[in-house]
Amino acid sequence: MVNKKLMALFFCVLTQGVWAQVFETPLMTLSGNLPVGITSDRVCVIIHQMPEVEDPSLAQKLHLNLEAMGIDAMRYLYYDQLYGGQDVYRKTLAALQKRDIGLLMFVEVSTQGVTLTLARMGTATWVDFETKAWQAKGQTINQVLIQLANKMKTLDLPYSNYLIPPGPEFDTRVQLFSGTHFPRYPTQLKRFPLAVSLFSSLPADGAFLNDEQRAYLSQYNERVALKNARIQEIFSDYPYKVEFLEDQSDAAYSKNRYQYVLRYAYMPGDELRTALGYELDPSQTQYISTVPVEGNRTLKTLEKQKKVYKFYIQKTANGDLYAGRYYDADETWEDALYNFKALMMAQFQK
Image (cartoon, rainbow, N blue to C red):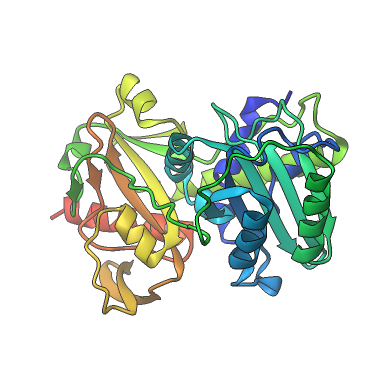
């Protein structure tokens, strides 16, 4: 059984702006048998492609073949969509569970080839590591799909998927707040503490880990410590009360009497603005971000579909979202955090 604390690893591995492998699949116990429900349960397909070998038509190719096999791939998701922030992870997971997803299909494409992994979806976590997974590897997507089709032919499977969508559906947008979007900062922060969620370090001594995994987690924890030190450095001149805490849900923060929590999201421009409650202008091809420079403000142009970071404050009791007076998204989490904090401080000092 996999230590559940390891799931925290998946919250921020891919939000650092670099390509990384899918971490779930190396932790799975593999079997020669397909997971139960392959032709009767709803499936979410998670695609992860290295930039060097990215194929924009991959989802369409997958769906045509999976539909022919009787596999109900009713939702598709790019891996870095799931890990677009800690709250993004929680709310994406909840949305998929609400759709009664039973199986996950990870499709990883790298310069070494293609890996397809089928696993049961968990109830409290993304993957159910207590059940065995099935995996196929090959040089091309066709090779792994043929392995899957041949495996299915050897089994007497009950088919009940008759309403399979005609094409891949990527509608996995999440709304990151349930209250009101405020284009300002909460002035109550002059009296109440701001909770800042830190990146999570992980235990690297679990009995289920092999030496390679332990070495990786040790290096990962060193990087986490550096990132958390950088967060505290950025807030070193913050004049009000701030507490740096392990990430929690809104309910947990509220229970511990933290009313305001600083969070971030990492998404393409349109998705980010929609998730944070901004109005969209379809005619725009770029977004203008306001960034602080030497005590003043300047404007920075961001391509509409470029993935960027944006920090915001959430009121835990009612789900209100304080996006700040300015749209201050940026290309790295450090710059986005500095932008939000500096512009908020400048506003409070007026």
